Each structure stands twice: as C-alpha cells, then as structure tokens.
Length: 534
Image (cartoon, rainbow, N blue to C red; front, top):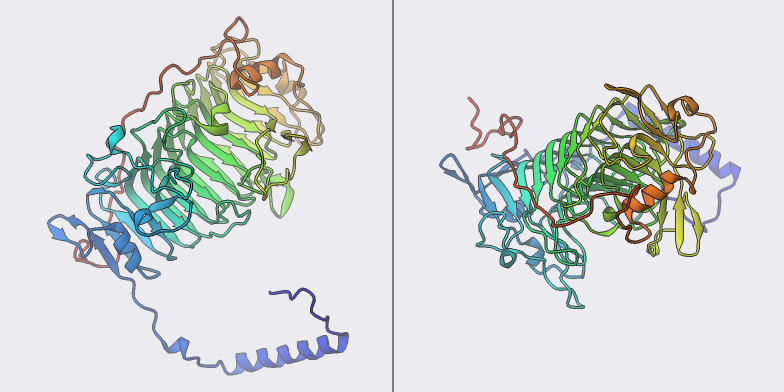
C-alpha cells in the first residue's frame, strides 16, 4: 500500500463511501470474473539454454553471460565442462563499483553445471590455465576513476528473486577496492534494505589459489548472501582460502536462510554473519582449519542496520537463529588469508558470538580448538561508519560503537580437547559480558573427558537458567585481557607466559579437492538435447 505524504486525509463519510464501493466491486468480481487481455496470453514455456558442450553435443552459446543475457524468467541455463573466463564486468559497465564475471539480473533463472568439478567459472585472465596461481594470471578488474582496480565478483545475482545456481566451481575472483566474492546473492549491498526473496545455491565450490599479500588482491568471500529476506538455502557446498569468510549471511534482520552440509576451510572465518538474524540456521556442516570457525557479530558498518539479533520477528521472546548439529574443530590456523575486521577473529576458537543477541548454539560437536570452544564477547567497533550506519543497538561514544552480547543460549554441545593453548582462561566455554536482563545462559554442555572448563568458573551452574538477568566475566578480568591479546584488537601482543597465541608466519593456500557433485544434473530440467527424456 502506498501512502501519500502530505495528502489530505479523507473524512469519516468519505471512508464509509469508499469501503462500500470496494465491497460492491469485490462482489461483482466474484460473481463475474473479468477476462483480461493478459490472462488470455499463455505463459512462455521454460527454455533450456546450453553453454559449451556435453557428451559430444554442442550448445547454442560459448559464454555463460551470453546465455544469461538471453534468458527469460523460468529458463534454465546448462553449462558443459570447461573453464569459463567470464568478462561481463569488462564489457562497458560504468561506475566505480566492482562488477561480476557473470551478472544475473533476470528473476527465476536456473543455472546449473553438468559437472561440479569440471565446470569452472574462472576469474583469471582469458587464456590462463584453470584457476592459475601465477601473479601474472590474476585480474583485479577494470580501473576506477581514481586509477585503483575495482575488483571483481564471480557469479553475482543482483536484487532478483527465484534464482538458483548449482553444480559448479568458482575461483580466483579477487578484491580491488571492492569485489572478491565468488558466488554472491546480492539483495542490495550497502542499502540497509532487503531486496531479494527466494534463492538457492547447491553443489557449489568456491576457492582461490592466489593471495597477493596483506595489501594486495585476494578473494574475500566464497558463498555469500546479503540483504536477503528469503526463503534461501545453501546446500552441499564447499569454500576455502577466503580472506574474510568462506560463508557469509548478513545485513538481514530476518534472513530466512538455511546453510546445510557446508564445509569451510583455510579462511580467516569459516562463517561470518554481520547484523544477520531472525530465521537463520547453520546446520549439519563442518568448519575446520580456519583461524576461527563460526563467527556472528554486530557491527556499525554498511551491512546496516545493526545489531545482530536472532530473536524471532513476531515473538521477540524466542530465538530463531540456530547454529546446530555442526562439527567445529581444529580452527587454530593463523596462516590463512585475512583482511579487515575478519583479521580480528580470535585464532583457535570454534564458535564466537561477538556483540550478538538471542542466538542459539545447540548440539554441536566442538573439538580441538586451542583457545576457546565457544566464546561470547562484546564487539567494540572503532571503524569510521558510512552514512547509512548509526550505531543502532549499540552504545555510541566518540570513535566507538560498543555492542554487548546477551540473550544467547549455549546448550547440549559436545566438547572435546578445547583450550590446548593453555592460557589461563582457555577451555571449552567462555562468557565476557556485562549484566543484562536477559543474560546469556549455558547448560547441558558436556565433554567426553573430565569436567567442562569455563571462564568464569562454574559458568554452567551460575548461568544455567535462561531468560533471567546474568553476567559473564567483566572487562577487567583475565578473560578480557586474553581476548584482547588473542585478537590484537588493541595492537600487537607480545608472546609471553599467559598470552601465548600462534601468529601468522606465511599464508598457505590449500588445493581444491574433488567435491561431491549433483547425482543427476538433468533432474527437473525440461527435455533438451542434453537431457533427453525417455
């Protein structure tokens, strides 16, 4: 319904007359439905547009972007094996923002590779070997007006609903001033609004073989959804070698998104979720070999509006954001690509809630993380915010937006051998938070060996009840000092007894292993020469 600001408001009689007219018109419509010209036009049948070749049969297109440009809503795009050095962002796109090799702006388009491991959307220069690691093969995109490289995104779905991307690999789309996202469902980056409904990514692999140093080009995000209101899903996916996060869902108060059967490795953060919440689930996934595993946070940035809040939109007393049934282990790796605030991720930590509220961490197996298995902390944001951000949900002071964490429930997790760095507070569970109503609650977490270790001590006895006032350790505690040292949020922290955390020596990129492909890439696709029906 459109509201006309400044228009004269109708009087009571006018309202009654208008309502009577509506009733009469509705009754007439029910009695005798009108036949419009549009209703007599049949909906076009979905077409199947084929790129490359499959089992000896050539398609109509050699470029994925050409097929995308020809697609109508409802159409399918099938892509045969090969390396596709797509260049849509180098084809006359204006402005200073990073573009995408493949840009999808038509709703209800379904893109599917015929072989997840052999269909590769490749960000390196045309003619380069597939996903080549050589510096001379990399492409950071066209220059902006200031002469700096824009950066490049891989496959970007931009503010349209109903798009699916499945069964393929994306690699080496690198950041310049922006960009660096391999697969991105973009519902309005930086707008503070959610402009994308249903979407799905499945059987996707996202990686990079190249890291250009702390100030050079690098891949930022693997599988990425922002400014979405869903329903959305990521199923059967893999992402690695990202300087920010293998997976990201953010800038959505009710994301209505599920991430299932994901595997994240060798990234600064396995998962990052800034200002995301509402209906949001991470489940049945594996997070290992990262600097930190699953990290969700509030932040006063262009993923506005803050804060991160897992409360159900229609029942604020309940939580609808769940991290459940995951295997989060061995996230002790400082030698990953890292940049920006992701570099503040606490090395050796399985799950982190940083300034987030009303999240549930349930029934996960959390093992072999050297600092803390599960950590709840505040997030002090000292970055200069963009005009769209106003420290919503935080406490503002000059140069700082401070987000405390409360209302989170950590329950039923199986913990094993966390805290091997052996600093005073390192262990299974840790809560650094001010007193709040409600506070964070911790209960029924268990370990295979001995007692669950916590900071502060006896956390599962003192803070077991949910929905009541409580506090964790305070900002003057040893836990606070060790979190600051681990993250180096206040600057370098010298290695010394009680403050020993591994630091970066040389960034290592891991190779992409073969991943499980879609069993039948023709399933659900209309009949076509590649998917002939019996």
